[in-house]
Amino acid sequence: MAENKTAEQQADTRERAILVAVVRDNQEPRQAEEFLDELEFLAETAGIITVRRFTQRLPQPSSKIYVGPGKLEEIASYCEENGIDVAIFDDELSPSQTRNIEKSLPCRVIDRTRLILDIFMSRAQTAYAKTQVQLAQYQYMLPRLAGMWTHLERQRGGTGTRGGAGEREIETDRRIVRDRISRLKEELKKIDRQMSVQRSNRGSLVRVALVGYTNVGKSTLMNLIAKSEVFAENKLFATLDTTVRKVVFDNLPFLLSDTVGFIRKLPTELIESFKSTLDEVREADLLLHVVDISHPQFEEQIAVVKQTLQEIGAADKPVFLVFNKVDAYTYIKKDEDDLTPATRENMSLEELKNSWIARANTPCIFISATERTNIDKLRSDLYGMVREIHSGRYPFNNFLY
Image 1 (cartoon, helix red, strand yellow):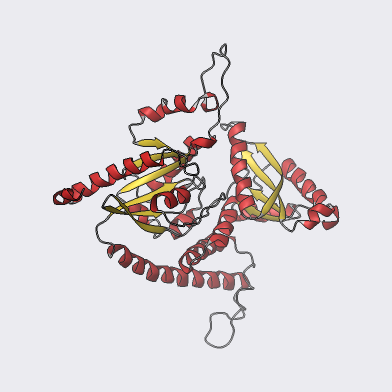
Image 2: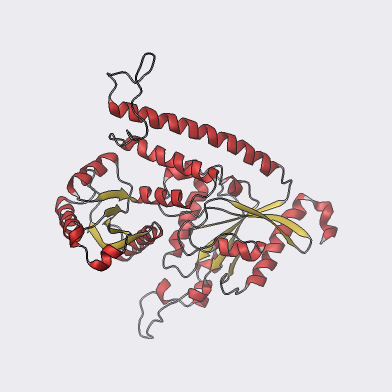
């Protein structure tokens, strides 16, 4: 297939990919394209170039090959003719779907979950984060084993071992992975106990946690509020390890934590593995929910974050909505004779502020972290909220402020 690539393509060592998605009958084409935009951004974060997208409208994905037979044949022909390295599917594929698709395509096949896991592994910096991601990867791969783990360890033989001559290779592989999962879980338990002690040693300071969809600007905001140097980048999942900083506003100290970003279809294996990291969210007194107001699907991203908070048991926390990136907000003004209802694309920022956001009865603010727009107001509002929580906890300490 290499001979089909141009000289320019051969000079770029990154993998070339096609994206594949099923558009459900109740799904708008525009929404499907935005989902694929996100998948392409994930691929870019993983260092993969997207060459083309394939979509097919179906009531639901095929249980055997995800798309229809004709569409899969079309994809296979394109991959063969254009030297495609990897096909990325926008849903998590079952083990049988993956095997069936691999038989038809001349390239590597991965799904959205595997792509996110690979990104997490490349982004993990600390031993704790690496252990969490490794556990998630093994849990994801266990039901998908098909002799692919024999490189991890040769079948053990000899008297008194379980790896006798009659044991099938795949069962040996499964046992190896299960053993590794058990060891990783034990390692995480030890680290979790250490982190629990660290949290208890912080005393009873008010705790504020930054939450939100990935790549909405949480780390940039963390740097502004805490005057810290948390890694921030315009890529998905720039932050994996929770960062906690002590912040003092006018003699009022509190703890501010930056946590891993959420995303649509966040793998359940990752949620399970990162539960201890997300303890910072569960134990917070106030959540700063950061939203990218410039994103076309910011309302859906809000819903994803709320759902994830529900899954980790933090849905009842007080929330301060921080609408970020107002400097990047754009809209198309409607013609005066257009009587159709206004949509997000036709609403100015002021009109949007007066829409459901004004009626939501949730404290909110509109800022730009990169341009430092309205940051002083953010600090003032945050100070008031933290002071109210602190006053309720220590009613006799109010003379400090």
